[in-house]
Amino acid sequence: MKIIKYPEQAQWAEICERPHLDITQLQATVSGVLNDVRTRGDEAVKEYEQRFDHVVLASLAVTEAEIDEAEHLVSEDLKAAITLAYENIHQFHAAQKFKGQKIETRPGVVCWQKSVAIEKVGLYIPGGTAPLFSTVLMLATPAKIAGCKEIVLCTPPNREGKVNPAILMAARIAGVNRIFKVGGVQAIGAMAYGTESVPKVYKIFGPGNQYVMAAKQQVSLGEVAIDMPAGPSEVCVLADETAHADFVAADLLSQAEHGADSQVLLVTTSEEMLDKVLQEVERQLALLPRQEIAAKALENSRLVLVGSSEEMMALSNAYAPEHLIIQTKDYEQMADRVVNAGSVFLGPYACESAGDYASGTNHTLPTHGYATAYSGVNLDSYCRKVTFQHLSEEGVMQIGRAVELMAAAEQLDAHKNAMTVRLGAI
Image: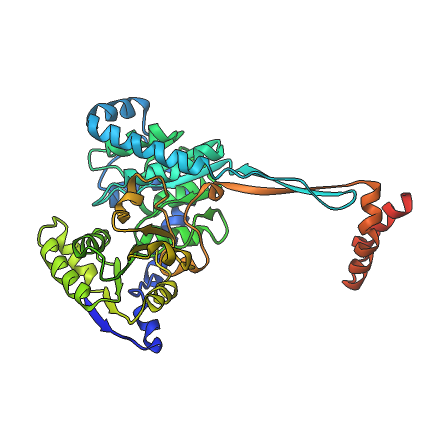
């Protein structure tokens, strides 16, 4: 891990720099797979499943019998944990329901909005080295609350053609309608274009490797909406002299084990804390099964010593982290100064893992500095706001002349006339 002490503000851009991810080399490959899926549908998807996931599939759909079987394969303890997490996620997201109100902007001119669910959504859930069944809860639960009529889930099968049972269990609990054994770029293509088996959706959600991310970006240019642009996962920890070094180290490593391209950043006002955290990271890293992945991620990471809590917070806002953990004595005051972050964890006991799994907040968050402009997944991610307005005769008299003048000034005479004929009728 790179140590930087008392950096000048001119160095902040370098500190905030993410590992460079060049996907230009992938674009042609990804485009080829997407076009093939668009053209040949299920046949192409099955061929790519054989090539990339090393499995021959007679059918892409997961059956009810397979979901029933999965229930028996998941331990009762894990079922209870998934259910607890689901209940908290449901409670938090249900509270986000939109409450529109009618506004009379002028006498006789009434405007309002109605929240309408996106009818068909697609969820992508990676399998790979870490089958993310928790992400099923994070994506499907708000979709169900929003009222999405069709919730489609794609996830890669193993070489026996089976989907991870915890993924199927979470999907049933959260209310997924249809599940398909499809991974990678071919899954994104199937949901974007539709195949004989996989329905076309209107918006695609979910994480994935660089190929999946490139595919989502490509299909978003003309076929379907996506949740957000994304890069590798990241965390920033702000710590003063009161922080627990072992907690801080554990938080850094919990992020680092996501992948070799993950990034962790510690910003502290205490040199003693910095040294303690270094020692703790080394000790805890040696105990991790995924230590090789975490160690690689730590190469992209930085420990930064600054002179004040104000500077600590300003650097965090410049970095705009996906996850921000504040372990300081004045964490409540620090929280008020957060401007750019995906999800914030306050105090010594709010570890990132809590939000990743079971506190109730969503863990699908903007990365790569996109927290400056994007929110994490929430109930609004699955909704559109339809705007309404009603004008009475009085309303036409109130704004009609202004509409005529503005339309004429823009040289849009038909626009002007649409109001003129109404004014004339009144």
